[in-house]
Picture 1 (tube, one colour):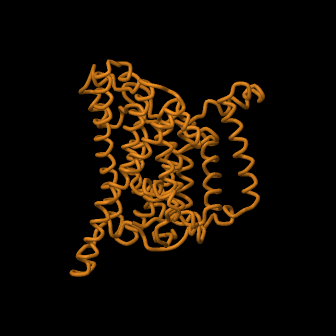
Picture 2 (tube, rainbow, N blue to C red):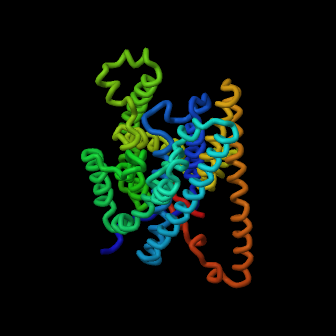
Picture 3 (tube, rainbow, N blue to C red):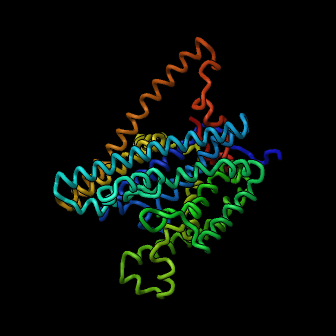
Length: 410
């Protein structure tokens, strides 16, 4: 069956880096309980949060890269790239798992605070280390705040046949993803966790956003151009975002909650994140719509110095995300052990974001060196001598919504 997808043709879109940087910063701030600075993140003002943004962009970028590899080199090459990337994420997750548990255990022991071990869900490592480590390797056991990477790994590992279908029957594949989402919510499908319960991020429902990102990457935006540019939809989006804001604030303010009918308040509180409630998907879709319309691909603000740290954190997302998990625990411990004043919360938040940014810049230096070296070698030996996955990862082509495309090129 011939390919039936239209891939965007363009250079690097720094909006992707910006949005992914925003997601990483928001995840760090949201992982610090009772942190006043976390009130700047989106989760406090609507149904969705940074997790939706992270998964959608990951699906878009992954599919944009792999789709081009499949089109140019074949299905086996694309699958190989996906498995290689999933393995890299798996190794990063295991390293983070061990380091995270070691840091928590060391601080709990050094400061005589055993409650930390239970609070961050690593007590099983003391009572039953072999089973817990085995289940950790199987992604069934996860310490607190370590749920996103396992979801990403599972989605990546299962993406090869989905992307093969997406390149041939993109709309039908998207409908199939929607069917799985609805069936998982109806029948209660999820993966089991250890020692009990299920995954905090249900892969059967969260795959919808990942596949939606893939659908946009292979031409879904062009097919939905009229819908995205609709003024009526824009007005509906404004009303929905205001409603989402009211329902979310009602969850924070009991007196405000009493102003709404109980049945209406209970429909949205508590917010169903595990199974990705439909109202979360719709909320994210409208936010993406506004971002696409208000921030064109050639937006001059992307060159502002003040946004460069966020963009850099988006470029080095894996390093920043992993460091953010450790730093959020350290920030929480500092606040719990000392003062919880507003200034203390601001200080640890800014310090953590600064360290994440420094790590992002540090991680980018070797790549700059390798790039300069590759250019030098290509001058002597020709481009074929340095051909690699990194050189061909990102397509050299054009548009999401014509000049509002979220394409990515490394």
